[in-house]
Length: 473
Image (cartoon, rainbow, N blue to C red):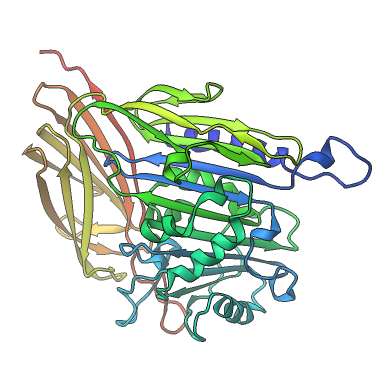
């Protein structure tokens, strides 16, 4: 199943969850008056490198928003606050925004605040958020206030007291009868994690955020499948959390693995919930789902993704026990080369109209060597300095041993702020099986706006598929 189809399936299911949770007018007793005005989306994702992420987003309940929604400054605006303890990502990049001053270019922003809609009260909102989380005045730096599809302001901070956001999150969610109530402070502080608060007040219809949802999922949390699952809740009052367990699983040899949502948050006896629950578990392409519990879930599989989906609607306000959602899967299906790409540029953020060097590093993290690699690098928004009329590069790597890497550099000149690259590889393993692998990425060039501000594209990577085909002798 293609990634776009996978995302569409999730959106359909989550839309159903939203419909189940729409409250009816509270007049005489009816079926509608028994439906809780909330719903929860849970996602679990496993990467090909063995990282495991779990995330929960609880929506349509104003009590999970930390700021006072009755305050007039929050009317007619969408406010999104993202905080994380991850140190390997500049959060500003995930929203498509960077600052070019030398003091801030490399700053690992831990907090980003995005305000969409009427901007009249943006300074007051920033001040209120700073006070709410114990941040000193001036902690947020304005990144941009340039309109995209609607007026939007973005602010970033390298405020490192992540515990302030965790304490607020736990205080708002710990009493909720839902999965989100089981993400304790110790789990969030001792793991790579992030929390998200999102509000839309006095806006009577869902809206689409101006920032890049896939960027948030892949660049901040490291999992595009998490982003696909949580996308709808950004159009609602919601609070969310994602926890990443680095290298939780070893895929050095093909074998069975079992994961459950409860185990990832330290709960093994099921979750008591008073709301509608949706679960989505994503596994690397080639993973074979052996079993899952409960049995009334759906499995969809393709060369790129294996997905298990469970939807558990609930009518009423009483607690019910949601069984622990667990999946046993076999991965990898066979020993093989496993390609992974990273890239750097010099200068680190290219300037429009100026030359830059792109260095591609191709890694083989699998247990077998890759041979006869035919690589193709397609690009747009840049010119290859040695061949200005070319729109692609082809090159060959004879052998890439297991756990080895190959670096190749190219000289480009940027002429557009939305440079994009596609790297494709066809190769063999030691048994003469044929593989195809592909990845896409964009850079973050500098584009001047008013004064010293800079708007740029987000950094994002999406590995599309890896296929294995038998090759006749």
